[in-house]
Image 1 (cartoon, one colour):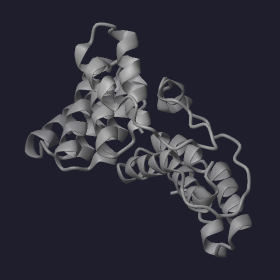
Image 2 (cartoon, one colour):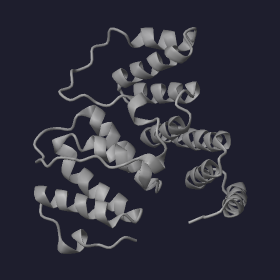
Image 3 (cartoon, one colour):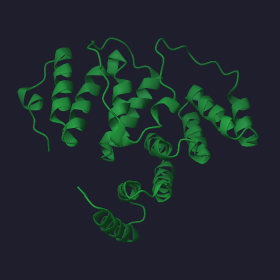
Length: 243
């Protein structure tokens, strides 16, 4: 863990050199973005995140691309191009309601944005199935930095129904963040997804793993215990120490 500005700047230099050798390495680019963010340079962080998202989108890794664009919005909530690209990916995934929300947000920032207005018009009138649960909107989930994200108090429950598509997206976003070792970003996505009883057990397990990875053994144990109330876990999994 870097403890001084000098150490962070040295890490930035080393990471930049590695990226020169592997410019398509998304994980390295995300790491560089995180280092810039810790160094207080939000602009450079956003630039790296955008490039990483574009790389994932070109490979049709839509969920991972959305996850990275959301990381941009955690730093710059009104970044119109990031919102626009998330909207386009939502459309590709068939999540027209989420796409509509993105275009509406763009129009709040830029009322004369013709591209957003045309896109919004093209999806208006398309009926979306009603949800029994209210899914938190983008503004509510993305205006905090990772160090300020705290776990919510999930409730116990059994897996009985098919996944809610909106909450399933949060689950896959969490998977994308976890694969990129962005555990602080994965945690709130799994917490949202755990609202769906059909995904609750898996989310609790993944939350336990994420908290274990960041060294929070108390929260890790809590989520493994919650999972064990739904389905019996092995003793080894429940007492696994922080890595």
